[in-house]
Image 1 (tube, one colour):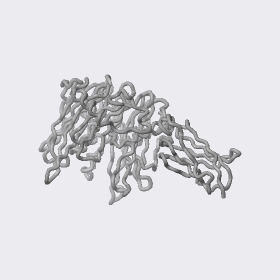
Image 2: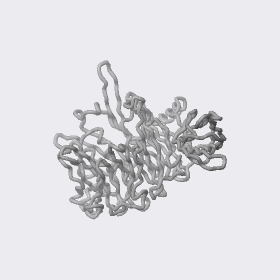
Image 3: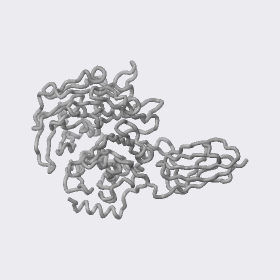
Image 4: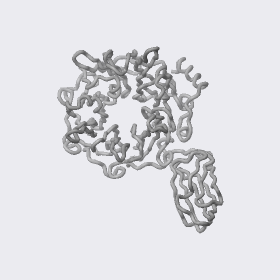
Length: 538
């Protein structure tokens, strides 16, 4: 239901105004969701980590958020943090439902903290995850609730936690899934635990309910809290576990690499998977997120760091035996190399379509001060080929100044973006936004905003040497400028990724001899074109 507070927030934002949208994203929004396609969650502080977005069968959204507050006194800045678990109605308004965890002082030290809490929506249930930092051991307590927050099950025993840290803990519940028999799978500290539906430890799994997949190297134990990245449950209830392995590249240097292993339904590490039981990435690589492709192949979204190309990312495809699927993409990989963009999230659509959230870190002119993140969505087909019918050339620029935390799809395959307002404003208030993108536009041939025709001019005309194309209309992406002589012979083709309003670019990078030419300009969608005759004089 829509509460008084959410209704008031809706009215307030009508007057204050929503984040300004331009370009392609506006064409995809479902304007009936929230207010003009955007659900807003106001916060008095600023959201530090909004790490999880999920949807139930009724189309309601569940959002887990860690929120950081700062109060400035005369002498110091006092920092505190709290956790909120919120539900939005299917129409995009906050419901009178949810959980607020009391705030704790000082997120950057653990001296005064003894309990950390998160919640997560999984398979029609709510799972609470409580970490208790005892004098001798750090333990984990798990409980299951129905959607009205009535307690159903307290899980038996306690799965250990490798590292008690307020920041890193909020990534732990990524390693939590149900299998196809409603058994809860928990990954942590290189181990996997399985619980029966009634909350009892499943002693038929591994060694009394647990299996060790990766052994920690005590040399790097202080780094080990950041080691485990994702779990994926396959149709036969086997489990793929990805991690980051630290190792000595030389005697004096430490490096890391991604690693994946497979555990059977019986809780045994599968030595036939990949090469000697695992898939090993190259040095300074990382398998960040795992998904199942439409043909049940394993998709691994990862990145690699090296001096030549510091921001490589790729999706690799493997069969259930851990063998690289060379028919996917380019010999098994969908690569985005040397393009200064990072990969953030991966999901698979209803027809096997692949959506990647990617971003670039934009700096101010001094090259050291962070300005904002530049986000876009990339769509590929199930074979790992970029789908150029999506957005412009396969990429939908989001043109947001927000920090985008997560992407998710609902029961009807609508795509949602969870983001935070101005993450550089550490004093807030910074609001959370959920944007709904329509399924029929995301997963089919997507529209390009061509309501305005191309508006260009050639100047000077006549020209000494190569003339310029001036954009006098809307922003254009992936522009192609072709130059022909009067017999129709193609002289040159020039690609321009982005042409802003009032921006100019050379017609051709070649030296042109005197004569009369035809200039053709086509926008990224190939749907709008511009022709002009130009004269070059000596």
